[in-house]
Image 1 (cartoon, helix red, strand yellow):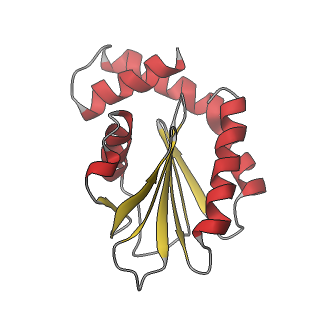
Image 2: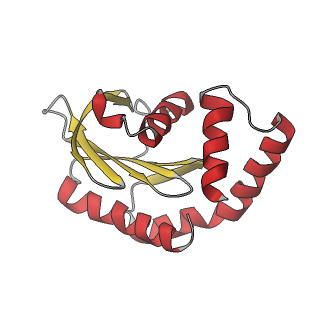
Length: 162
């Protein structure tokens, strides 16, 4: 059921092929949002203190707060769609005002780094059954410290049915 809701979201708003009418879709999305209010509290226990989480079903964005680096909804939808299609690694990922090259693809996880090596930042994308986590880290955080935290969060969310 959770996977079908994610697929409906993709068809409804990314591919503009609605499977349900807008009213029904909005009711389902609101129901999911109510159920998923517990995600931010879990993230606060695991992630570095200065990182924030933004949940907008079907994705969860994680990054440091910044005036000039934001993940907009349209970009997130593209990342979610390309992740669900298994095609995120085929092109640079444009997010938070930066371009990332994918360096590692695993069964559920994709990692990348900024193409500008002077900027010490990277991206982590993890596909769960109900949502896609899109996370960005920057110095002084490194891939060796940040990725395990996001993977731990993903494990906890997966164990809760996400």
